[in-house]
Length: 206
Image (cartoon, rainbow, N blue to C red; front, side, top):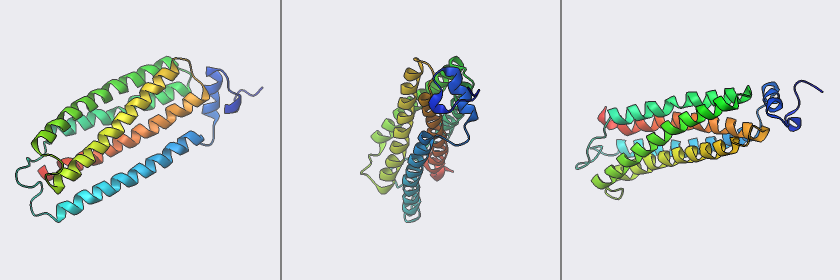
């Protein structure tokens, strides 16, 4: 038998890891996530375009009665979120080397930071809702649409990681390794998106 079995023939964690390292093409699951990410990038491109169209059509942005967005806290939170791309990628690398324990630990570290980020951001989001509701102005409408959409994507990523951690309790299979790569791809996209969102969010205060 070949030392590098095809992914369909890999039935043990070690064989799965060897097959993954020998793979020349990306798996279908990865491409499926790539197509999904492309559609979401298009959606947020439309949101950003709408935001700046409204901004350049409005004399005062944000409008009177709406405080300028805070800068320091959103930037710090986004920096912490973006940093989670490192443990997520390390989890992929560890799984490909059949180091499942290290992969789980890296995912749990990323998950803890991401959950903390989402919790703080939701607290700030609800505080902003009390100050200026979405139906008050065009600024409020696009502001909450943009942030709400981003927070939802973070929540989806957290749920995907929780599901993946539960699946990895049963060991490593080729399907779970593909899922890990797809989830890592998703998180890299979400973190790039987070940078675009926060820069747009704080732009009136810069």
